[in-house]
Image (cartoon, rainbow, N blue to C red):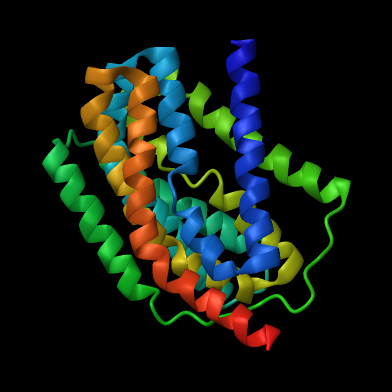
Length: 267
């Protein structure tokens, strides 16, 4: 358990620092896309497989597809609340409520793989439409990183991942799968960026979050199919390959725009 615990913390540290760097040094829009990449989902499903078995994780992946509705309700609620208040407390509180309500409803069902996939696709398409007119915000003077700032980000994210994974043995595969869709990498990033850079940067990031979730759909669907056949390690690698291909297709336009802007600045 000690090795697995350290492994969880290491991967989580890498994810949150990487997303923070992209958001603050490169582009909040690109960070939003990458936040939708199955970082948290992969971490949690991977460890479900190692600790509770490939079949458990494969079933949880189906619920993860359904749980994407809840994670997008979280992002959308946080986005809208920041339009009405500069408070840090209310966006977090209401967004967590926005996650738990649909999660509770999903937990009362037993979806098939096609039904879960249909729900995930429908929800992601809807939220892409709802957030398509978000304002773009660039950080004019990125904040320098202190050891305290890094420690806050690492502790917050690691605590969330550990809480979600350790609950799996108590709540069963349905709630475990739903929890695996909780934005464990996005929430600390959003909360800390909100505190340090203001709500406009956060809205740029959240506005692009649903677009990145197409890669999560691809990942969870792949994992649900291949974990029982090829095992956790190979299933995870295959899932990442599919998810990366999808993210590259979805994210090619903002990447090209970023490179174009950089080229113009250098002239």
